[in-house]
Amino acid sequence: MRAFGSVSPILLVGPSWVGDMVMAASLIESLRTRDPGRPIDVIAPPAALPIARLIRGVRRTIPLGLGHGELGLMARWRAGKALRGEGYGTAIILPRAFKAAIVPFAARIPERIGYAAEGRSLLLTEARDDSARKTARTIDRFVALGAPRGDQMTSPRPRLVLPDGAREAAEGRFPLAGEGPVMALCPGAEYGPAKRWPAEKFGRLAATAVAAGYRVRLFGGPKDAPIAEEIARVAGVPVDDLAGRTSLIEAAALLAASDVVVSNDSGLMHVAGALDRPLVVLYGSSSETMTPPTAPKALVVSHDLPCRPCFKRECPLGTLACFEAITPAEVMAAAVRVRA
Image 1 (cartoon, rainbow, N blue to C red):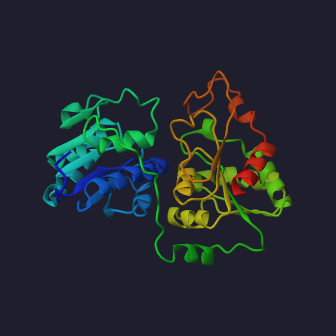
Image 2 (cartoon, rainbow, N blue to C red; image 1 turned 180 degrees about the horizontal axis):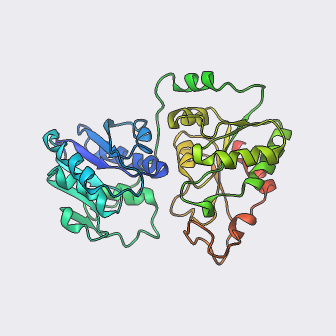
């Protein structure tokens, strides 16, 4: 990295996953600590970019009009050319994909740092070794890219800051009837079904929570709407189904108003954790050592099996045994404990 005190802005090429963008907040905080006068801009696909606007220290967010998995080589080249006059001195590329390095290369940013992957080292000025990718925490890998090679840095916890009035506006648009603590359920996981606790189990948990005096809210994007509908059907009690109805910022604001959040290992889990919510996280195919909850009060519910973590999108055995072993009763007990 350039010497401390540089005023040339940093361009952060951000991830397309919401959870990874939350974890990028740790890198941004570490950069602010190392060189507090240096502006930081973030370029990323639209799905995750709203989260960057909630990260303290981000000066500007730049939409990259491409979806997750979309190659768009010429679009990326044009986006980079459009940034040539911005005076960026350093680019940090978080995604490992070859395509992610095209924008800062086309922008002619003199220092381009990322992990060596997909044969893209020629596009980088500093290609870092990523041999610990399958064992290190994602947060630590991100923070390491912002430090001089070989430096051992302590990763700050990711934090999100809601705009003034965001919580009140969201609660006004989506009022919740009744009284009692609010349990937020986040049953989705964009990565795939092997990261989703079954809807039938979420439904039984919702019924148990309502019987215990909780008001239950279901969160998720449009793709999660069928899952939420199934949960509501199984629960057989009134729940507030918000899946597909809120913006990402509204969902964050309402999560911030919840008394406890129960979630799969998903983007919304990381959002809730960065908003300091008491959190219960259910792990199936993914690993709680690589993407753990960072909330001050968090409990992990998982079962050790020979086949997990497999990191697959779908269960290779067709059994989803890692999630079938988790019962609604133990999740409810964890929710009660984490609020204590």
